[in-house]
Image (cartoon, rainbow, N blue to C red; front, top):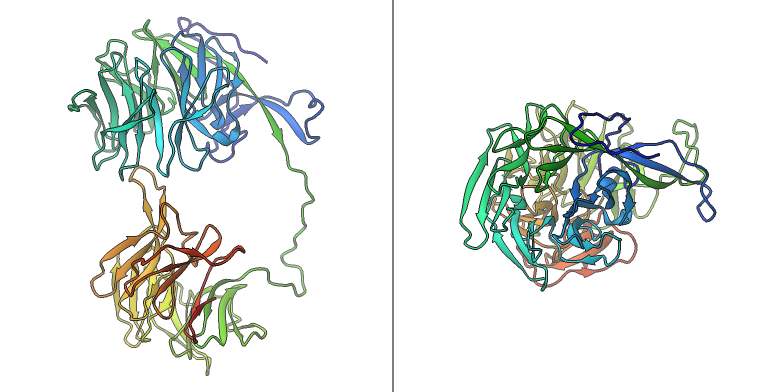
Length: 571
C-alpha cells in the first residue's frame, strides 16, 4: 500500500485508524496504525512470524534533510527515512536502539539522535544509508535532544550530568564537550539560530531563554502562565521569531512569538522544522503535516513502515486458583530472623508464618485480614507486624509465648508499614503510606516523625547503637524526570539529618522494599541486594562507607535479614 503526496498548497486531510498506547509500552507495534497482514512470510522467517505495516503513529518527530529530499522519523523507537513526498519508509536502526529526536547534519551526510541502547540516553550518529553507526557520548548520565549547529561543527544537547539538565556542546571533530549553561533549574531542548550565534532552550516548562554562544549572555524570549507548558522551540527562517509547542487548557498548539501557527489539531510535542522557503514540517494526530508560513493550507505526507511481528509460541500452563487440595508454596516475602537465630518469620499466603529450628512453618493468624512485615523484638519474645484488622494498616505486637496481640499505633487517616524494632526494644521504626520515616514508642504509643517522605523508600534498619537509621531511597538525577539511583539514606535518630551514600559508584540498590540495607549486628557492614545479588558494604558506626562493596552471592538473591546470634551474620 502506498500514499500519494499532497501539496502543502492544497488543503486536504487524511484519515485512518490509530492506537495510542505508551511509546515505551512495547517496542514493536506500539502507537501505530496497522495495515492488514501481508502475504505469508518468505522462507527463513519463523512460522509464527507475520508482516504488517504502520501508516501513522503516536508521539513521533519528523526532520527534513537539508536538501528537502528526505524525512527522518523516530517512529516506534526506530529511526526511519523516507522520501519527502511520502511513500515507503526505510528502517535504519533495530528495536534495541530505542531512538528519538533525529537531526540532520547541514551537509545531509549524517543523522544524530538520542538512543537508550545502553540503559541511559546517549548520542549516536548514522548515515542515511544505515551505515557507520557511531556512539558519541558515554557514561551514567543522560544526553538528549541533539541539534547540529548550522556549520555542522558542533552538536548542542541537554544533559543531567550536573545534577540538573543543562545545555552542553559537543565538538564534532574532537568529541570534546563543554557546558554552555547549567543552572539549578532544568534547561533543555536546545535550538540553534539560523546564523549559529544563539541557542534557544526551554527552562522548567515555563519559559524559553536565548543564550549567546560566544559570550554566554542570556535573555528570556517567551514566558507562559501557570498551568501552561512550553516545549521544543525552533527558529523561523528570519532568525528573529521562535515557534514552540504549547499545551494549554487541554489543547496542543504550535505557537510562536509572531503568532499562533497551528491550532485546533493534536500537535505532537516535538520541534517544528522550517525550510528557507517558508515551508515547515510537524507531526499531528498521527500524521506528518506540512504548511507554509502565512498560509492556511495544510498538506499531509503519507508513509508506510513495514514491520515483522513474531508471536511467541509456547504451551500455556493452566492455573486453577480455587482448585481444592494442597499445593506447595513457591514464594515468601519479608523474612526476619530471631535474635538467637533459632526462628524465621515471613509472610506468605496472606499470613505470617513462624519456622522454628528448620521445622515446618506454621501460620500465626489464620484470619482474613491483610498482614505483612514481621520483625522480632530484641529479646525474641515478641513479633511486630502490620495488619488492617482495624480498617487501616497499624502496627501490632504478638507475644509469641501466649499468642496475645496488642495494638501499638491507632492510625485512622494514614497507614504504617515496613516496621523495624530498635536495638533497645523501646521503639519501632516504620514508614507511613507516603514514604515518611517515623518511630513509635512501644510502651506509650507516642509517634515522632524522623524524616520527610521520599518516593517509595525501603524498609528501615537500625545501627546497633540505635543512633542511626538506614533505608533505601531514590535520588533523582534531576527534577525533570524521576530517573535516578536507589541509594542508602542515613538518618540521625536524634536530629533527623539525612545523608545519602552510594552502595557503589553509579549503581543502584535493587527494588528498595525488602532488599536492604540491613545492618550487621556488630555495626561494621550494611548488606543489600544489587542487580539480583547480595552485597556487603563496610561502614563505620554511623553507616558511612569505610571501603568498597563486595559481592557475596552468585545465585539470585534478595530480602536479606540479620541475626544477633554469635558470631552475627546475614541470612
